[in-house]
Image (cartoon, rainbow over all chains, first blue to last red; front, side, top):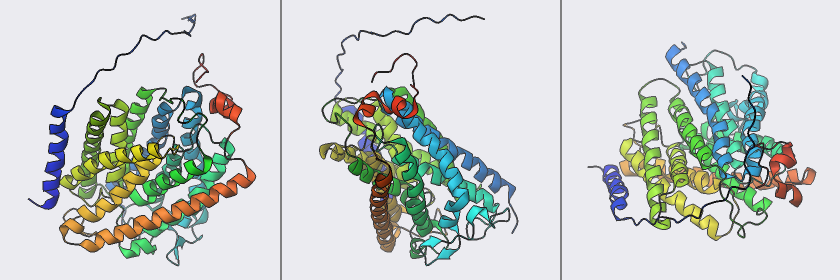
Length: 45
Length: 412
């Protein structure tokens, strides 16, 4: 394999294999109170 | 010379694809700003589409591609498209009408100053923006385009490779964006209050449309409908996907979650980086270039945040650094197996090409820094670059354009 192909394979391995090892933390989100709602608009046919 | 109908159709279609990129950029940027500034941000891109379309036919094309003057600039012989007709020009594109080449290049000239607008989003006065864009296109973009792409341009003669604009479009705009951010200063409350994108869906849609249009940008730069265009299309898609995957992985590792906006930004970084290389590298080279773009552009954003420069939408990190990486990578991974009219890069036995690319990168950085700084200072003599503080607080949509983007919600 030429150097470019070797580098491409290594880059792909880093990215694909990395996902197995990556930690994941869910973010806790407080409910948002909506203070400004659009008013209903009458629509005629 | 005989006009090839297939080549002409592809270049005209590509021009239309590249045209779409500028409003797409407006949506990409528009989603990233606060809702009080979304219209002004989209207006930057839309207005430039109109402004540079006229500048280009009047004098821009002649300066960039007209008969060479001292290897620095094109002459004024083609002003108002005088002499730019339907017969092919053998110096640029021997199988399509000269005007087809001209209008394809016009779309590049349009999007380049639009890219800069992300740096001064949410605080630049509209009139100053108009003057700056016109002067920048004339005194920064047109000369660099001539150096690299013009017949007789000094970087062209030196052998610099830039298939679709890594140096001409992305380094010039990205570096100029950094200068603009430094000259204009930070937005009110920068670093004290959190500025979050008002509509991430708009940003992802904009990125997707940019990706679509970029096929015209890169594959269209083959200036013909054949094998080279096909190769450019394939490597463009590959590098873009790889950069998005890489950026998402890096941000996942860094921030513990895979960012959606990060994936979109990563895709754009990949598009930027493959641009100069797209007609010279094979698909393995594209994977390395995409990977590198995802890493270096992400790191550039961390650096920009650390030194507290308010390049609002990270134009320098994505376009300046991404373009620099792409231009350098062209000198590493280019191969005549893809484009026999070009040259091999370092990894194919030609270290000189990497040095030539460094010269081109240095020239584009230097002229962009100098030109942008001087233009901003000159514009500031006539029109203040920034809006007043109270105008910035209420937002540019209302203060500059008198229109809210969303009917019932004005605040923030």
